[in-house]
Image 1 (cartoon, one colour):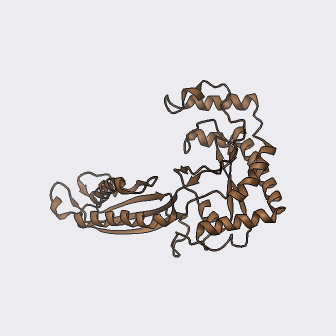
Image 2: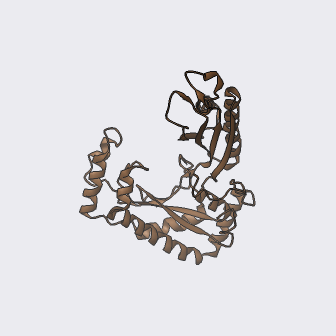
Image 3: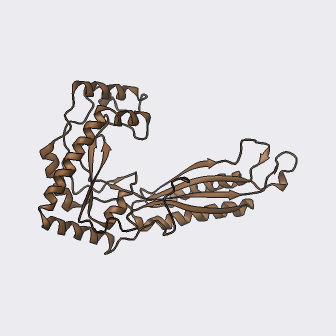
Amino acid sequence: MAREGVFDEADFIYTWHPSTINGVDDARCNAIMGASFEFFGVSSHAGGSPHKGRSALDTAELMSVGVNYLREHIVDKARVHYAYANTGGSAPNVVHDYTKVKYEVRTPKVEDLEMLFERVVNVGKGAALMVGTQMKYEVTMAFSDYFPNDALAEIANECYMEIGAPKWSDEDYALAKKYVDSYEEGAISNKIRQKDKPLDSKVTPYDRDNREINGGSTDVGDVCYAVPTLNILSACACEENIWHTWQTTAQMASSIGYKGMLTATKVMALSAIRTMQRPGAVKRAKKITKEHNGGAYTCPLPEETMPPLKTY
């Protein structure tokens, strides 16, 4: 949507994300690029004629080894993840002629993203050369890094302080305690485990000096490169909740998640109204965006890449 100019006519944008805390998001997120790598080999009998086979699975494993050695030589806070999407079969006595693996690379700045991705691609090419297989890859996703807009943050922080944190009931606290207790020993700190009310009930002030890089990524990063954008955080889960777990899913569908969502809605609505009443703030917000994107937004997602609705 950002690449196609959907947000170009907007003066500013507020968005939100579920969290364990309440406040304007003052952290940054990594840029990310993901791709599917396919390896094509030659099938053969692994016992009778292994010399006639060219293993696609071996190629994928060699790529993993190469990328693991690459990790020592990448910029700080960068990340590389992978997952096997198709190993090409489950019979160990057959040389696998096809394997598909997905890779994602993350960097603190979008300008470093393509360079790291190309290095991963070259590792895959080298692995295919070693085994004697063929490789092809397809970029399936790419997000720019997210950065908070201080001009918008001043207004949203003011509004958040007025609205306040979600109003938790005793039932909410009891439910949150159950989720805290559901995590294995060591996953949640003892400090939180000993709490009877493990839900954030305050608003954390915006810290404009914070330059912490969140290890995750978001496509909101592309929106903030195109137009002034700010992310709001609202507690929708117990303190120290671990994301991408069944506990997260359950809490989002509970009264805890619902109250957090309504709080974020109120903050965004009041912030939007107040921002429209302050044209000077909008002007400053646009200046910040222009300084960050160098004068124009460039999408890291290739022009030919369409939404991977059935492939990613």
